Length: 420
Length: 88
Image (cartoon, rainbow over all chains, first blue to last red; front, side, top):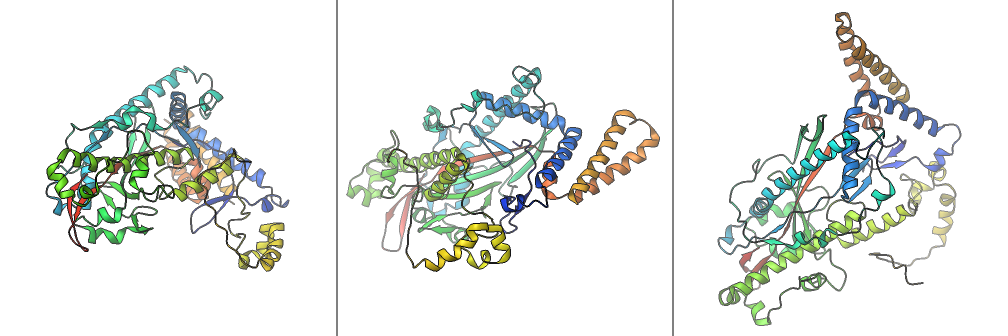
């Protein structure tokens, strides 16, 4: 949900679309008063918004304030406040017949069909919650005389249990074995759009634009083994990326099925060093240990399936459940670092952790200018580069000239504050 | 430059708001109102994209995620092929 933020001048890297704040060197340049320009533009923006969108902004403020008050986990970033809601119950699906014709699209369809009804129910509950929060806001139960653009972020609300993992919720690991799936195509069909935009007036007095985006995460362990067994593997493999021998998708997904962006993740990349096996990942969670089989049973799974079908099924389902729960746990950890989605690897999670720690401590990173990076002497050692990089730019050449080689690697998955 | 354009947009929108609150039923103002609406749209298009972002009517984005843990069991037939036994 968007909220109003103060207008700040910035520079944009046109390759990446990332916006950086105005360089301090430029800001200190006395010939241009950037602060004054920002204040003036902010005045115009606020005035125009007040005339044209005050009711829309008021409705959004009621909803945001209400959700914060309700204790829904959130983080704010780039003028948006991102809320995270409870996941639906885990559903299982186990298939032993007609596997030679199983396709990637079938796996997606089955996954969507399993949870679509629950998700629709959750969506209705969400709209109902938003409606009641809006009504409470209108009645002024706890918003009182606050202006329409005020965000209610008092200390009590900030004490939301952001560190509480959704995994603590008992519903998370409840497994519904009764709900069968249908072979029907999910709503909208195979080629449906990945975005839908509607104007909703069901939970606010004003019509609010609602954009829905759908993402389908397929999570496996050693995905190269599982995906290569699918019938249409040859057709989809060109759209997959390989990282450390695992099939994944990087960046915006190229695969869209049934209106969902399909994102592929491998728990091997999300496991700590030395604990890469599925058994090691499962042992990190309560009641989720991988089921132990003898060497003979592992080498002769076809015999196990015939002799001990229940054990075979339990063993098989546990493996997929470990993948699912570990990936969700990692996503929760990523959310606490102000990031959405399941990261590709643990290294990315480590990088997010470091950046969040820097951000929390007020450190904006060591690069002074996005256009003139320290380390890129060919750009920094130019008149414009030296002006942007300041004293560091002047000293970098001396440092490079005296650097005779070496290699240092470090990986940060956490900060140990206890070791002195 | 963008500063001036934004100021112009503000003035146009103020006139429109004044017409809406005081004389929206007056026929002689209808044409002016229509012209100003069109003018406001044109000026809006000239404003820098970063300022336009602040002026947009914004809504909610709902991201619906489906998470699927996927695994297969198979029997190794030879060095090249496996036989799939189950998918879950």
